Length: 493
Image (cartoon, rainbow, N blue to C red; front, side):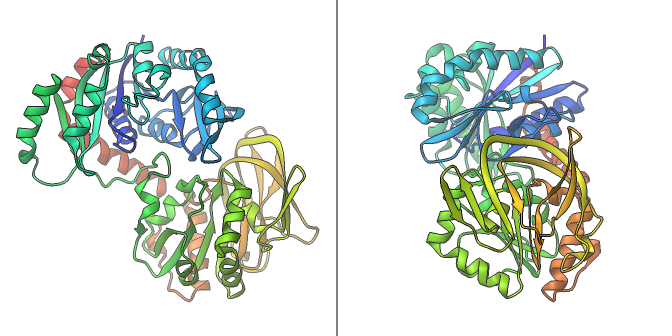
């Protein structure tokens, strides 16, 4: 039987995903075979495993940090919000149904056998499992049917580390309020407290730490500084999409749609020296950009309507006519086409690519690799370049007879097909992770710079895989330096 520890938080975005990844990295580097587990994840950033199944992107990141292959058992339930009150419910990597929040709340306890089966699958393969909670364990309106925080800790008999975010202020109130809202038997499960995102002189915290330890009867096992590590984060709470990245001459604007998904597709672009990238809803940002990207969406028709109501569709169209590079990934690719049809409803797209999309009930989930097909025109220099990534989408797109496909792909099941479309400086594809490939990313940036009249410096292109491992190593170093690992190892059960 494997050993385990669970990371819960006083709130969403307290740093559970990052701390989980850091502990996994430490355990793996210490010679253990370690794995992440999150029973229920709510996020629009997802990933396709080698099994062709869909899980939360954060668990894929954590598996990479642990230097192990990601599998669907690491995240048996994934909720992908498609409205303010409902989500697509994915169980064991496959779509179960669309449910309202109330419907799911009434149903979710039926999924406990799936959760336990997934966890036991990991137990049979790994030495140590780091379990991640969700939100806060002190949501008193939800506690009775909890399957992801203290309810899960009880099911698995797991010791708990409680993470609190000092950067937002009120950290001691967060900790005390969370602990005091728990039942006595739940409090007993909390074996240590981690104060996260601290800036300043840690010695000034000592009086507060002593008091909170006395009030709660729980030791503080470390104070983590505000870490500037670049790893994939879980959802739209990420600070990534609220910040400008880089100060390079090539301005890239990613349209921040209401149901944006898989925005981690663009993380590789953020760190390139020639790039200044922003996630935006502002027309003036789009007008200034040399490259405009329409990302994936969990509600393509809804986000298309939002583009039109906000007038951003007109701005994007004008920018395309003026020569801006326009790129659409997945839902963004669908929006760039002529029409999108779902049942009896047909909506007009942005009309920048000769493509029509039809939604069906089938969800496509696959990894794929291939080559760029473009033989002439704006992207002729891309022809023959290798591409790889994964597809997660509903519906399929039909190219007009005169249309030029973007690439030729072979899926993990051996299916060969053409994907995407190119017209002038506009292209779209269903392939997530496209920019992770160093060669393709360099070609894209070189073309975009030259198209915009900006000098291109090839030496600025990074080795993405090495860069990601460096970030995990930085995280590991911080965990070792600032947390009491002897205490944490002692609480593993």
